[in-house]
Length: 298
Image (cartoon, rainbow, N blue to C red; front, side, top):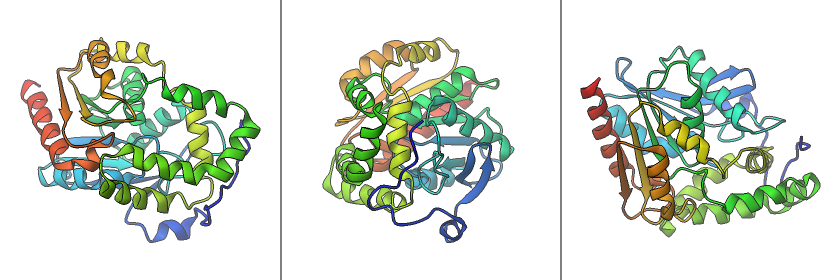
């Protein structure tokens, strides 16, 4: 287990004072405090939004507002190490993030028979959760899903050397994160917005440590078996992919369709890896159309 470190640029503690000004809710789970926002009409069908590798829950704001306006109830949350959720001193592996999602639904007394939506690494979390869930979600949507690109394998091998990983994280982590933000989206304007959203939360101590540990501990490649397992489930599935995705290249879309067997798949035009952030109106319209189809068949 890597020794916890504080990187350059992390000048804020994550404590009660830091959370007091936030409109979010906070709940203590077995691994630590999780930041969440539960909004929309209490009687609406629940949509749970599972975050990706780097982003806080504010990533979903425009989609949340649009879904709430259409009568859906939404749960967005920040993964451990992101947003105002706790920085865990330990492994950031698949069991941690599945446990967080499972315990969050239980703590808030929410029905796990929901519409589950995951983006990037969050798609892997959503799929792994679905594969092992006692109560299956009503539907599963994956957006720009991780797990098949080999690009993360090299970084994971390098970060297994603990001393080197900590050195790189302390000195270069914030710079690498900013570069990654620009790589995630298609336009300079979206890059500036995204960097501002993410950058503020990465000022909290332990943020880069959490990111480094996740890249090292969470299998972001070689997940063909998970895709195939979920593909065999009798569950409505939707696949969305950004037209100019440079993180999980669109060349992988045919492979995902073969393994996951989604009922529907669509390329979202004029965006990169972060379709819900770059094209929220398009994504929301597609989600609600899919949800309506699922509900009509129920």
